[in-house]
Length: 267
Image 1 (spheres, rainbow, N blue to C red):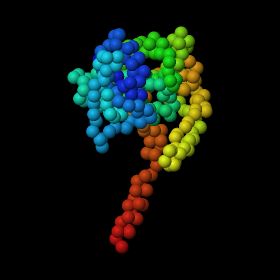
Image 2: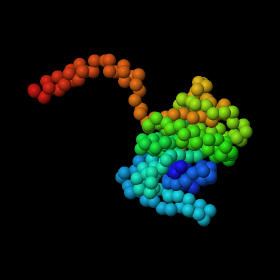
Image 3: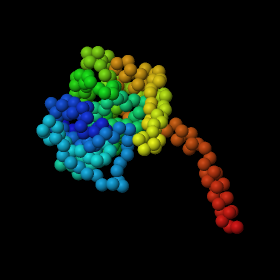
């Protein structure tokens, strides 16, 4: 397959290098990634500033293109301008640090895969549960199998996979679980500091203090040593509430408000 690779840790990150090594054994790999770290930028895109692209070498060999933008920018630009032909698949990662629970909303890694799904391409985001990560043996062993599975059994339109790999030797991984997006509880604080010019600034600090207790959640399964695969979709509609609201009398609310407006304007 022709696979587009991107990430949010930046084109010089170790994870994207490992991902390319894994994929190049069986596939044609094209790299378009941010030139600097873009962690937690979510699904941001750049439209107030120009995007600049430059070729990057690693170990003296052409590696890919660096873009001064976000992960979603990289996918858009790669598909529309930089690749002669569209990719068969888009893979974002390997991200340092798990993307589970509410982290999925913030993650640039996941957003790149989501952008690809929005554009109609099979895609996945891949993260490893460590920062920094030192052992990629589980990714090297299991990721090619997951890629092959996605190739032979396509997902429904608009769906991407969020894959999280435990930071364990491949031999200690307990299996693969299909999971739902879980919930995490954080203890967040801001570290107040003063710079050399006596100006106050703040640095966000956070620590996970509670994982979702549901064994079907991504955070719980990952903590138990399983590779987690969660299907995700960009439609944020809550359909239960949608049906509930449709049964309520919103037309009367409009008529009352409209009547008041007409009454005021006629004075």
